Image (cartoon, rainbow, N blue to C red; front, side, top):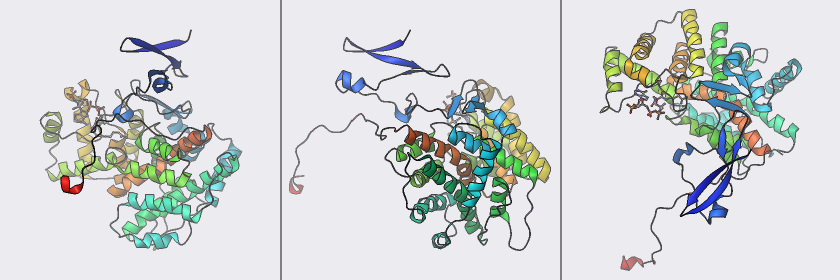
Length: 428
Ligand code: ACO
């Protein structure tokens, strides 16, 4: 039997269908609300209760700690797949066959050269520019070098645009870092895997060969998989809404990068390390910071703990903690910051305040630790997140365009002045 939701306004009842979808989630379909009620709207700041679209890409259940891409659990994907397989899965909906995966990788490699003129743009940035700003600008600039707009009804054109950005984005990310580090820009090596190649482009010094450590490559690959999509978060919603005006893929992605830059979103991994550094400067007194986090008159929060959606645990954090331990062991990292992190984690997991509120370390707590162990500077953490999130953004943009979703244009509830007659400047 189909379900109905009834809204009563001033004694008049309006009925709306309740849709039940694949994971038994219920949603009230209010598409006709304004038409039938004569202009009544809904208000939901931050869209905490509002589905902006129907999507078949990522399923997330924050209460149960479930995250699945196209139906596959994040745990299984992180263990058994590599980042490019996951990217293909997210974007095209199915795991690739061996032949499809090889072609995908080979097509991406074929696009891994950016126009030499991009270097002139990079040269124009000050060395101290934040790499997220550089990355979003360069991603927009790609349009100038690839000006033909993509016919979204053509699978072939769509595919070509997708491999183009997947090929060029790691180059731009690595170059944003090298500019900052004062290193000459490095070209990739197509004999390497996607992640190894990225590592080489980031870290190879002109004076010596670069050898990739497989433990590091594996940890980074997993991190990228864990960040690859997270349904309608701030940056993904941005990509969809920008694309809904029929703006192209690259500029929609550039908008997503800017949304991710914010400290309330992708910037949290950076905030974790900054907090740990502050604790170190304060004689490593974790107890003091635990007390501050619990003190309601103190705005301080333990960065890297708690999550808006995951209220039991962050499934990504469980996976990445194991990788973080492996990386630190493999690299023999001895860093007082990492010792502080371990101490804080142990204390918080045993503390009644954190246990009662179900505040567990989130993915950003451990990702920051891994990046730091790899020698990646703090302000490159968010670009690393962007590299991981890229397939998710692409998948969501493609889905939105293929479903021919209407332009995103939220309503508002106006709270300003009512009509008032204009006064000439001399009468004000
Ligand atoms: N440290 C101390 N107390 C906390 C923390 C924290 N990190 N997080 C939540 N709390 C407390 C709150 O004070 C509140 O306590 P109360 O019930 O006594 O008032 C309770 O836990 C619930 O907190 P809310 O703010 O309601 O939780 P919300 O879901 O709104 O916030 C958020 C989630 C923003 C992630 C929060 O936990 C936080 O600020 N964490 C630190 C920042 C962080 O790590 N962000 C990264 C998230 S992961 C990601 O974005 C990929």
